[in-house]
Length: 336
Image (cartoon, rainbow, N blue to C red; front, side):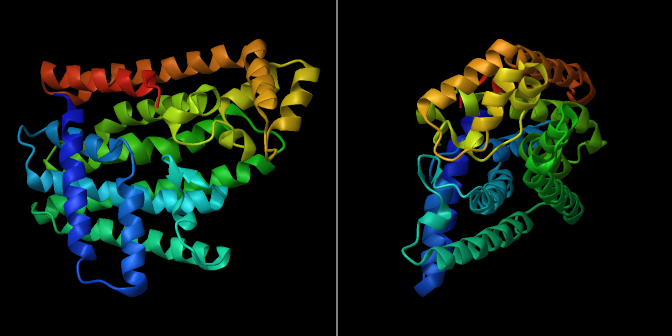
């Protein structure tokens, strides 16, 4: 099954859903919701809803309206987390447009406050949407449990990510933990388990062996693209990860493997605001010359292989095994 064929159905549902909840609203409530609709509908691959649909399909052949509705709740969760994340990172650009807190014409303080509140509203709307889908209560309860677990792991991962730059002895294990908590559970593993729970999949936690390593591989690729990718494809400045001082395997390995002179160059630029194209190229050269780039690629591929090895444990037939394998390769080899 090609899960990407369901993206249009998710988009159509979200567009109709926002039109319904905006109807009759006025004042600041209307402004919040209109901006939330624009922010949510702007770009995005809908990966989390699609993985939830895939999780449901592992034990059910029919992808009906209720599955689309339930899975669409994850786009509201995505908006909630991105809105808050952009405030933490002090970002101005998201998906080729302004971040949510830059969509208002109020003072910076008021705009930030409104964005925080709008994120909380999006979170509430997500739960409301999921719980209003027509599935047996026990299935919904289990799916909601996994959603709550996603948010718990993501919150802890974000806290570690925020504090990590302050550590003097950063290492790959720290980065790996952030990837597991902040990305693997949130983007792939959790959505798969939410969908599987709705379809009475037996022993949902078996999915961890597939979803967690794939999520780590996905995030490593994301970090590579964040430094070596195309800004037009990414929808954000290619210097943004460097400027915010993001700690990745590329950075940790380069600090470990580079010459003393290259380490000083990297430490001087990493976390600096207003990085130039020349400085970006310097960092790229250090990472490649030190061997950190190749080592990171090797680690990413090892996680991909670990994920692929787990497919027979969760796929009940060859069709599903093939779909899980294809999406795994796609997530790691993508350029967005």
